[in-house]
Length: 404
Image 1 (cartoon, one colour):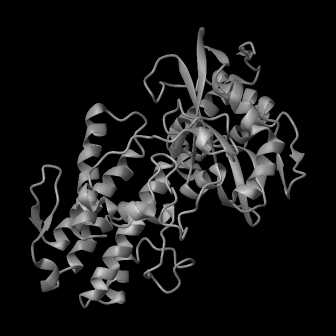
Image 2 (spheres, rainbow, N blue to C red):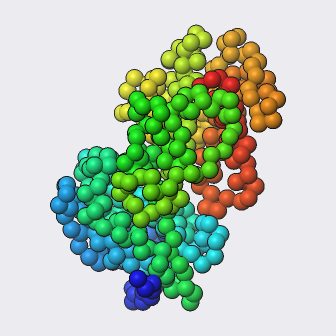
Image 3 (cartoon, rainbow, N blue to C red):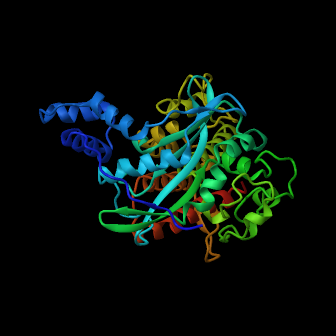
Protein backbone atom coordinates (compact mmCIF):
# COMPACT_ATOMS: atom_id res chain seq x y z
CA UNK A 1 0.00 0.00 0.00
CA UNK A 2 1.33 3.45 -0.90
CA UNK A 3 1.82 6.02 1.83
CA UNK A 4 -1.10 8.33 2.43
CA UNK A 5 -0.13 12.01 2.54
CA UNK A 6 -2.25 14.44 4.51
CA UNK A 7 -2.22 18.02 3.24
CA UNK A 8 -5.15 19.71 5.01
CA UNK A 9 -6.00 23.24 3.92
CA UNK A 10 -6.49 25.98 6.56
CA UNK A 11 -10.05 27.02 7.30
CA UNK A 12 -11.38 30.56 6.76
CA UNK A 13 -12.51 30.83 10.36
CA UNK A 14 -12.14 34.22 11.95
CA UNK A 15 -8.52 34.59 13.06
CA UNK A 16 -9.46 35.86 16.53
CA UNK A 17 -11.34 32.66 17.28
CA UNK A 18 -8.56 30.50 15.91
CA UNK A 19 -6.10 32.44 18.06
CA UNK A 20 -8.29 32.01 21.16
CA UNK A 21 -8.76 28.33 20.39
CA UNK A 22 -5.00 27.87 20.01
CA UNK A 23 -4.32 29.74 23.25
CA UNK A 24 -6.83 27.62 25.14
CA UNK A 25 -5.41 24.46 23.58
CA UNK A 26 -1.99 25.30 25.01
CA UNK A 27 -3.16 26.87 28.29
CA UNK A 28 -3.64 23.61 30.25
CA UNK A 29 -6.31 25.49 32.22
CA UNK A 30 -9.74 24.37 33.37
CA UNK A 31 -12.64 26.48 32.14
CA UNK A 32 -12.82 28.15 35.56
CA UNK A 33 -9.12 29.02 35.43
CA UNK A 34 -9.44 30.13 31.80
CA UNK A 35 -12.34 32.47 32.65
CA UNK A 36 -10.40 33.97 35.57
CA UNK A 37 -7.30 34.53 33.44
CA UNK A 38 -9.23 36.11 30.54
CA UNK A 39 -11.22 38.40 32.85
CA UNK A 40 -8.02 39.43 34.63
CA UNK A 41 -6.54 40.52 31.29
CA UNK A 42 -9.87 42.08 30.22
CA UNK A 43 -10.19 39.71 27.29
CA UNK A 44 -13.32 37.97 25.97
CA UNK A 45 -13.82 34.50 27.42
CA UNK A 46 -15.05 32.97 24.13
CA UNK A 47 -16.14 29.74 25.85
CA UNK A 48 -19.05 29.07 23.51
CA UNK A 49 -17.07 30.22 20.50
CA UNK A 50 -14.09 27.98 21.36
CA UNK A 51 -16.42 25.01 21.70
CA UNK A 52 -17.98 25.94 18.38
CA UNK A 53 -14.59 26.07 16.68
CA UNK A 54 -13.76 22.67 18.11
CA UNK A 55 -17.09 21.29 16.90
CA UNK A 56 -16.54 22.73 13.41
CA UNK A 57 -13.17 21.03 13.23
CA UNK A 58 -14.06 17.75 14.86
CA UNK A 59 -17.72 17.15 14.09
CA UNK A 60 -18.04 17.43 10.34
CA UNK A 61 -19.59 14.01 10.06
CA UNK A 62 -22.31 12.07 11.82
CA UNK A 63 -21.78 9.14 14.15
CA UNK A 64 -23.01 5.66 13.31
CA UNK A 65 -24.83 3.37 15.70
CA UNK A 66 -22.99 0.23 16.76
CA UNK A 67 -24.69 -2.98 15.74
CA UNK A 68 -22.74 -5.21 18.16
CA UNK A 69 -24.03 -3.39 21.29
CA UNK A 70 -25.57 -0.13 22.41
CA UNK A 71 -23.28 2.73 21.40
CA UNK A 72 -21.97 4.82 18.53
CA UNK A 73 -18.74 5.51 16.67
CA UNK A 74 -17.17 7.92 14.20
CA UNK A 75 -15.47 6.76 11.02
CA UNK A 76 -11.80 6.62 12.01
CA UNK A 77 -10.25 7.87 8.77
CA UNK A 78 -12.40 11.01 8.56
CA UNK A 79 -12.24 11.70 12.28
CA UNK A 80 -8.47 11.39 12.35
CA UNK A 81 -8.13 13.78 9.40
CA UNK A 82 -10.27 16.30 11.31
CA UNK A 83 -7.95 16.02 14.32
CA UNK A 84 -4.94 16.66 12.08
CA UNK A 85 -6.68 19.66 10.50
CA UNK A 86 -7.43 21.13 13.92
CA UNK A 87 -3.88 20.92 15.18
CA UNK A 88 -2.29 21.98 11.87
CA UNK A 89 -4.44 25.10 11.48
CA UNK A 90 -3.82 26.07 15.10
CA UNK A 91 -0.13 25.10 14.88
CA UNK A 92 -0.74 23.08 18.03
CA UNK A 93 1.81 20.34 17.43
CA UNK A 94 5.02 20.72 19.41
CA UNK A 95 8.20 18.80 19.95
CA UNK A 96 8.08 15.03 19.72
CA UNK A 97 7.78 13.44 23.20
CA UNK A 98 10.26 10.81 22.05
CA UNK A 99 12.82 13.39 20.81
CA UNK A 100 13.16 11.28 17.71
CA UNK A 101 12.90 13.71 14.82
CA UNK A 102 10.05 14.40 12.43
CA UNK A 103 7.36 12.21 13.94
CA UNK A 104 3.85 13.00 15.12
CA UNK A 105 2.86 10.63 17.91
CA UNK A 106 -0.70 9.62 18.83
CA UNK A 107 -2.10 7.54 21.65
CA UNK A 108 -5.00 5.13 21.15
CA UNK A 109 -6.69 4.11 24.37
CA UNK A 110 -9.90 2.79 25.91
CA UNK A 111 -11.28 2.82 29.42
CA UNK A 112 -14.47 2.65 31.46
CA UNK A 113 -16.24 6.00 31.72
CA UNK A 114 -19.30 7.19 33.59
CA UNK A 115 -21.37 8.72 30.81
CA UNK A 116 -25.11 8.03 31.03
CA UNK A 117 -24.12 4.91 32.95
CA UNK A 118 -20.98 2.84 32.65
CA UNK A 119 -19.52 2.78 29.15
CA UNK A 120 -16.30 1.92 27.36
CA UNK A 121 -14.79 4.90 25.54
CA UNK A 122 -12.17 4.65 22.77
CA UNK A 123 -10.08 7.75 22.14
CA UNK A 124 -7.22 9.32 20.16
CA UNK A 125 -4.81 11.71 21.87
CA UNK A 126 -2.06 13.72 20.08
CA UNK A 127 1.15 13.46 22.10
CA UNK A 128 3.20 16.26 20.48
CA UNK A 129 1.51 18.70 22.86
CA UNK A 130 2.40 20.59 26.03
CA UNK A 131 0.19 18.52 28.31
CA UNK A 132 -1.37 15.52 26.55
CA UNK A 133 -3.14 14.49 29.78
CA UNK A 134 -5.44 17.50 29.43
CA UNK A 135 -8.98 16.49 28.46
CA UNK A 136 -8.98 18.97 25.58
CA UNK A 137 -6.54 16.70 23.74
CA UNK A 138 -8.59 13.51 24.28
CA UNK A 139 -10.88 12.85 21.31
CA UNK A 140 -13.40 10.01 21.69
CA UNK A 141 -14.31 8.15 18.52
CA UNK A 142 -16.40 5.34 20.02
CA UNK A 143 -18.55 4.90 23.11
CA UNK A 144 -20.02 1.47 23.77
CA UNK A 145 -22.14 0.09 26.56
CA UNK A 146 -20.24 -3.09 27.36
CA UNK A 147 -17.96 -4.78 29.85
CA UNK A 148 -14.20 -4.43 29.58
CA UNK A 149 -13.73 -8.06 28.59
CA UNK A 150 -12.15 -9.52 25.48
CA UNK A 151 -15.29 -11.28 24.26
CA UNK A 152 -17.28 -8.04 24.61
CA UNK A 153 -14.68 -5.75 23.04
CA UNK A 154 -13.96 -8.02 20.07
CA UNK A 155 -17.09 -7.31 17.97
CA UNK A 156 -16.74 -3.56 18.67
CA UNK A 157 -13.09 -3.42 17.61
CA UNK A 158 -13.98 -5.32 14.44
CA UNK A 159 -16.95 -3.10 13.66
CA UNK A 160 -15.06 0.19 14.01
CA UNK A 161 -12.10 -1.20 12.05
CA UNK A 162 -9.45 -0.23 14.61
CA UNK A 163 -7.07 -3.12 13.92
CA UNK A 164 -7.07 -2.43 10.18
CA UNK A 165 -6.66 1.33 10.77
CA UNK A 166 -3.56 0.76 12.93
CA UNK A 167 -2.06 -1.72 10.49
CA UNK A 168 -1.47 1.10 7.96
CA UNK A 169 -1.14 4.02 10.38
CA UNK A 170 2.66 4.25 10.44
CA UNK A 171 2.92 4.21 6.64
CA UNK A 172 1.20 7.61 6.51
CA UNK A 173 2.79 11.04 6.52
CA UNK A 174 1.59 14.55 7.21
CA UNK A 175 2.72 17.97 5.94
CA UNK A 176 3.15 20.37 8.87
CA UNK A 177 4.84 23.79 8.78
CA UNK A 178 6.40 23.00 5.43
CA UNK A 179 7.93 19.70 6.51
CA UNK A 180 6.87 16.09 6.12
CA UNK A 181 6.21 14.17 9.33
CA UNK A 182 5.76 10.45 9.78
CA UNK A 183 2.94 9.21 12.00
CA UNK A 184 3.59 6.95 14.98
CA UNK A 185 1.32 5.55 17.69
CA UNK A 186 1.21 3.81 21.03
CA UNK A 187 -1.62 1.90 22.68
CA UNK A 188 -2.15 2.89 26.30
CA UNK A 189 -4.71 1.50 28.73
CA UNK A 190 -5.04 0.32 32.30
CA UNK A 191 -4.01 -3.25 33.09
CA UNK A 192 -7.50 -4.71 32.72
CA UNK A 193 -7.90 -2.95 29.39
CA UNK A 194 -4.66 -4.40 28.04
CA UNK A 195 -5.17 -7.98 29.24
CA UNK A 196 -8.74 -7.87 27.90
CA UNK A 197 -7.53 -6.74 24.47
CA UNK A 198 -4.82 -9.42 24.45
CA UNK A 199 -7.34 -12.04 25.71
CA UNK A 200 -4.95 -13.29 28.40
CA UNK A 201 -5.27 -14.16 32.09
CA UNK A 202 -6.78 -11.56 34.40
CA UNK A 203 -4.88 -10.41 37.51
CA UNK A 204 -7.19 -12.37 39.82
CA UNK A 205 -6.52 -15.71 38.13
CA UNK A 206 -6.19 -18.67 40.51
CA UNK A 207 -3.64 -20.30 38.20
CA UNK A 208 -0.28 -19.33 39.71
CA UNK A 209 1.77 -20.68 36.80
CA UNK A 210 0.08 -18.91 33.89
CA UNK A 211 1.59 -15.67 32.53
CA UNK A 212 -0.01 -12.59 34.01
CA UNK A 213 2.37 -10.00 32.49
CA UNK A 214 1.96 -9.38 28.77
CA UNK A 215 5.45 -7.87 28.58
CA UNK A 216 7.86 -10.16 30.41
CA UNK A 217 5.69 -13.23 31.02
CA UNK A 218 5.97 -13.19 34.83
CA UNK A 219 3.53 -15.40 36.75
CA UNK A 220 2.05 -15.17 40.25
CA UNK A 221 4.59 -17.58 41.72
CA UNK A 222 7.24 -14.97 40.96
CA UNK A 223 5.09 -12.06 42.13
CA UNK A 224 4.13 -13.76 45.42
CA UNK A 225 7.67 -14.34 46.58
CA UNK A 226 9.78 -15.71 43.79
CA UNK A 227 11.31 -12.28 43.35
CA UNK A 228 12.73 -12.18 46.90
CA UNK A 229 16.04 -13.74 45.81
CA UNK A 230 16.63 -11.04 43.19
CA UNK A 231 14.19 -8.17 43.91
CA UNK A 232 15.97 -5.61 41.72
CA UNK A 233 16.26 -7.70 38.56
CA UNK A 234 15.18 -5.94 35.37
CA UNK A 235 12.88 -7.68 32.95
CA UNK A 236 13.04 -6.56 29.35
CA UNK A 237 9.93 -7.14 27.21
CA UNK A 238 10.24 -10.66 25.86
CA UNK A 239 6.74 -11.38 24.65
CA UNK A 240 5.78 -11.27 20.99
CA UNK A 241 2.33 -10.49 19.64
CA UNK A 242 2.39 -13.93 17.98
CA UNK A 243 2.09 -15.38 21.51
CA UNK A 244 -1.39 -13.87 21.75
CA UNK A 245 -3.33 -15.62 19.04
CA UNK A 246 -6.63 -14.03 20.07
CA UNK A 247 -5.38 -10.44 20.41
CA UNK A 248 -7.92 -7.92 19.17
CA UNK A 249 -5.23 -5.59 17.77
CA UNK A 250 -2.98 -8.20 16.23
CA UNK A 251 -1.42 -5.65 13.84
CA UNK A 252 0.20 -3.84 16.80
CA UNK A 253 3.42 -5.22 18.27
CA UNK A 254 3.80 -5.70 22.02
CA UNK A 255 6.21 -2.75 22.06
CA UNK A 256 3.39 -0.51 20.82
CA UNK A 257 1.57 -1.12 24.10
CA UNK A 258 2.04 0.89 27.29
CA UNK A 259 0.57 0.36 30.73
CA UNK A 260 -1.06 3.72 31.47
CA UNK A 261 1.28 5.64 33.78
CA UNK A 262 -1.47 7.26 35.87
CA UNK A 263 -3.18 3.94 36.58
CA UNK A 264 0.20 2.41 37.39
CA UNK A 265 0.96 5.10 39.97
CA UNK A 266 -2.53 4.71 41.44
CA UNK A 267 -2.08 0.96 41.81
CA UNK A 268 1.37 1.38 43.37
CA UNK A 269 -0.07 3.73 45.98
CA UNK A 270 -3.14 1.57 46.57
CA UNK A 271 -1.11 -1.58 47.19
CA UNK A 272 1.34 0.22 49.46
CA UNK A 273 -1.51 1.69 51.51
CA UNK A 274 -3.29 -1.66 51.81
CA UNK A 275 -0.15 -3.49 52.96
CA UNK A 276 0.80 -0.69 55.37
CA UNK A 277 -2.76 -0.54 56.70
CA UNK A 278 -2.60 -4.21 57.61
CA UNK A 279 0.77 -3.72 59.35
CA UNK A 280 -0.67 -0.75 61.23
CA UNK A 281 -3.66 -2.78 62.48
CA UNK A 282 -1.49 -5.77 63.39
CA UNK A 283 0.64 -3.53 65.59
CA UNK A 284 -2.18 -2.03 67.59
CA UNK A 285 -3.21 0.85 65.34
CA UNK A 286 -6.85 1.72 64.75
CA UNK A 287 -8.79 2.11 61.51
CA UNK A 288 -10.00 5.53 62.63
CA UNK A 289 -6.46 6.83 63.08
CA UNK A 290 -5.43 5.62 59.63
CA UNK A 291 -8.58 7.00 58.00
CA UNK A 292 -8.16 10.35 59.69
CA UNK A 293 -5.05 10.85 57.57
CA UNK A 294 -6.72 9.72 54.33
CA UNK A 295 -9.89 11.74 54.93
CA UNK A 296 -8.64 14.58 52.75
CA UNK A 297 -8.24 12.43 49.65
CA UNK A 298 -10.99 9.78 49.86
CA UNK A 299 -14.21 10.10 47.90
CA UNK A 300 -16.81 9.14 50.48
CA UNK A 301 -19.28 8.19 47.77
CA UNK A 302 -16.92 5.29 47.03
CA UNK A 303 -15.38 4.66 50.46
CA UNK A 304 -18.50 4.99 52.60
CA UNK A 305 -16.90 3.19 55.52
CA UNK A 306 -13.45 4.67 55.01
CA UNK A 307 -10.32 2.92 53.75
CA UNK A 308 -10.41 -0.86 54.31
CA UNK A 309 -8.22 -3.90 53.66
CA UNK A 310 -9.66 -4.39 50.16
CA UNK A 311 -10.12 -0.74 49.20
CA UNK A 312 -8.73 0.67 45.97
CA UNK A 313 -8.03 4.30 45.17
CA UNK A 314 -9.21 6.06 42.04
CA UNK A 315 -6.77 8.10 39.98
CA UNK A 316 -8.35 11.28 41.30
CA UNK A 317 -7.84 10.11 44.89
CA UNK A 318 -4.20 9.28 44.16
CA UNK A 319 -3.62 12.80 42.87
CA UNK A 320 -5.38 14.29 45.92
CA UNK A 321 -3.22 12.15 48.24
CA UNK A 322 -0.03 13.75 46.93
CA UNK A 323 -1.51 17.19 46.29
CA UNK A 324 -2.48 17.41 49.98
CA UNK A 325 0.95 16.02 50.98
CA UNK A 326 -0.48 13.05 52.84
CA UNK A 327 2.68 11.12 51.96
CA UNK A 328 4.43 13.31 54.52
CA UNK A 329 1.90 12.92 57.32
CA UNK A 330 0.99 9.22 57.06
CA UNK A 331 4.35 7.77 58.26
CA UNK A 332 4.09 9.72 61.53
CA UNK A 333 1.27 7.51 62.83
CA UNK A 334 3.53 4.44 62.64
CA UNK A 335 5.11 5.26 65.99
CA UNK A 336 4.49 1.98 67.76
CA UNK A 337 7.69 0.65 69.39
CA UNK A 338 7.57 -2.51 67.26
CA UNK A 339 7.61 -0.38 64.09
CA UNK A 340 10.41 1.89 65.29
CA UNK A 341 12.84 -1.02 65.50
CA UNK A 342 15.43 -0.91 62.71
CA UNK A 343 15.23 -3.81 60.25
CA UNK A 344 17.41 -4.78 57.27
CA UNK A 345 16.17 -3.77 53.82
CA UNK A 346 17.93 -5.27 50.76
CA UNK A 347 19.94 -3.15 48.33
CA UNK A 348 21.30 -3.88 44.83
CA UNK A 349 24.85 -4.06 46.23
CA UNK A 350 23.76 -6.91 48.57
CA UNK A 351 24.54 -4.76 51.66
CA UNK A 352 21.21 -4.20 53.44
CA UNK A 353 20.40 -0.86 55.01
CA UNK A 354 18.89 -0.58 58.51
CA UNK A 355 15.73 1.47 58.79
CA UNK A 356 12.51 1.49 60.78
CA UNK A 357 9.25 0.62 59.07
CA UNK A 358 8.09 4.24 59.43
CA UNK A 359 11.23 5.57 57.73
CA UNK A 360 11.03 3.10 54.86
CA UNK A 361 7.34 3.87 54.41
CA UNK A 362 8.22 7.56 54.11
CA UNK A 363 10.91 6.76 51.53
CA UNK A 364 8.58 4.52 49.50
CA UNK A 365 5.70 7.03 49.51
CA UNK A 366 8.05 9.77 48.37
CA UNK A 367 9.28 7.47 45.58
CA UNK A 368 5.71 6.98 44.35
CA UNK A 369 5.22 10.75 44.64
CA UNK A 370 8.13 11.13 42.22
CA UNK A 371 6.38 8.84 39.71
CA UNK A 372 3.29 11.02 40.08
CA UNK A 373 5.22 14.25 39.49
CA UNK A 374 7.01 12.83 36.47
CA UNK A 375 3.64 12.00 34.95
CA UNK A 376 3.15 15.69 34.19
CA UNK A 377 6.54 16.24 32.54
CA UNK A 378 6.03 16.61 28.76
CA UNK A 379 9.64 15.59 28.08
CA UNK A 380 11.58 14.42 31.19
CA UNK A 381 15.29 15.21 31.26
CA UNK A 382 17.87 12.37 31.22
CA UNK A 383 18.60 13.05 34.91
CA UNK A 384 14.90 12.75 35.77
CA UNK A 385 14.68 9.47 33.90
CA UNK A 386 17.81 8.23 35.65
CA UNK A 387 16.29 9.06 39.03
CA UNK A 388 13.56 6.51 38.30
CA UNK A 389 16.15 3.80 39.00
CA UNK A 390 16.53 5.16 42.54
CA UNK A 391 12.79 5.37 43.16
CA UNK A 392 12.30 1.86 41.76
CA UNK A 393 14.99 0.50 44.10
CA UNK A 394 13.38 2.21 47.10
CA UNK A 395 9.96 0.69 46.44
CA UNK A 396 11.30 -2.80 45.74
CA UNK A 397 13.54 -2.65 48.84
CA UNK A 398 10.52 -1.79 50.98
CA UNK A 399 8.47 -4.66 49.54
CA UNK A 400 11.22 -7.25 49.66
CA UNK A 401 12.28 -6.18 53.15
CA UNK A 402 8.75 -6.76 54.43
CA UNK A 403 8.37 -10.00 52.41
CA UNK A 404 5.31 -8.62 50.65
